[in-house]
Image (tube, rainbow, N blue to C red; front, side, top):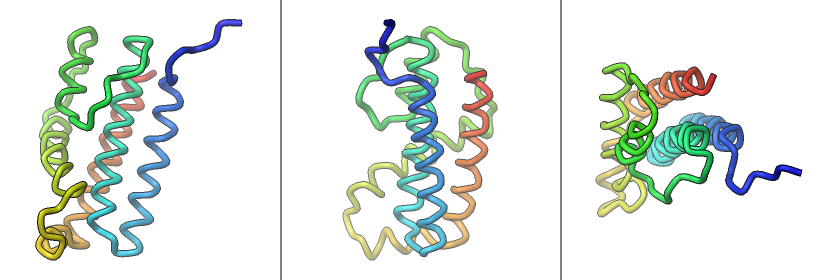
Length: 135
């Protein structure tokens, strides 16, 4: 029997989709900070799905989306559309503040319904792009 010794790209993608649904639930419950956190996590796991498919091993433990893209690009041409690339850089910068806010009240002001919904929609587009890269 040929058993995988790493998490399959299908499993990473399944988890990315689940995290995106969680982001949507956080939006509906007005937990905008956590919606953005889950958006980032969804993209992270999506990129890790590409990594797993390309390298046939588990990706390094990192939350840095730019680092994952750099590693994948060493072996696989991603051809990232500019709007997706810019958004990934944007949300990557939001990762640390959403995980470890310096001042909760202050960071909550930065994530309102309007911008959190936009981040969710852009994340959905990134995940669709990732899925196409896996075909």
